[in-house]
Length: 246
Length: 265
Image 1: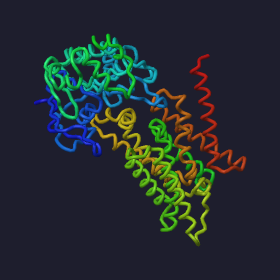
Image 2: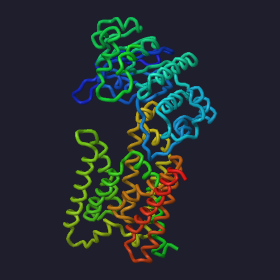
Image 3: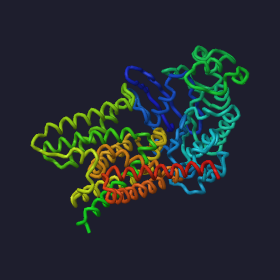
Image 4: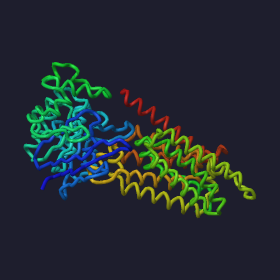
């Protein structure tokens, strides 16, 4: 039985239809990436998987007893809220301190246990989020543009970490990413979304699909075309064509 | 012991401080300060209604505070920004409340008592209501503590952990209405938000964890109640505002200390 299956899912906000008849199945142990321009419904799809957005049609079926690890796009902790890394990791997970130490070690950020969350750097913060998501040994890990705000090297290391997690724990991974070069090398399957599923399949198949090219352009231009879609937020990489073409 | 009005007033003040502390922390963390204000202002309409229909003030204030809080929760994100919506609803409710009170001919009521509290007139029955309400709020927040914190940090994190953050929001809304209703007698509708926010904000610079912030806020609130009442007695000043003044002075002191420590020796 698949971990998650999405059947004929439609989501509407007011008069605005964000997703129409989306089907998606996530099997144990696979790495699936959702790509698509801004406003294509990527985050809505992820929210529907965790039950945060109610569909107007279709349904999301989770395998009974499914354990989800979730890494949000951006987690803002109000500076008035004092909380240590340890307290944050154990907030909804009944786990021992040792498990926290181990989880932080394997996420590559040891010795942070007693630090205040507000004092972490962007990279440390994302890794703590990842460690927290993994601490309960989830069956599936959901990442919503989890490398936003990390530099090129930081995000490469982050994705390497995720591959390691999959190899060691067999956890399935469903992620949204804007970084096409990473997606293409790290995913088993890519779903190209633009209000509906444009095309899906192995990275090679999707990269050569006409629907994908219509959205993202061809060749090295693919990554560039994608970046042109987001003018609504700042990103500190990708503007340099040499980097984006990697 | 309860025969002494000062003892009853002190107990009332401490009771409200205990309920306001953990709730006030969430109000600060979630940036709901204005929301607390709006709910409190609306309660004056509840006071007018209870006088009209001869119900207990507590019931009327609770009902209107609850309706107000739920309305705001429902309307949020539908066209108007939260602060605009709150500004409209809070001040309309306050204005309608004040107008409604003026229609109550034949009943001689002291409006000041509801706007600024009348803590020295707290009866044994009031004490029971205050401590009952405060215990309910503290129990509710303690029971949902981890979930409330998670939902405050990030709502998707809450969904992924298998619970609905909107339900946690409801817990806070409910607690807020109860706190407002029990605090009317103590500090009055205009200063309830101060009892929520100032002790919590003062506790921030001393706290290292969410739990310690709530506990320190409770201590600051309780101390403010005791010291405020004492100085009101000594200097013959209004009791409710005196309590808030002590809290505000503590806030200033702790903030300065926190600022100094952060800057290093």
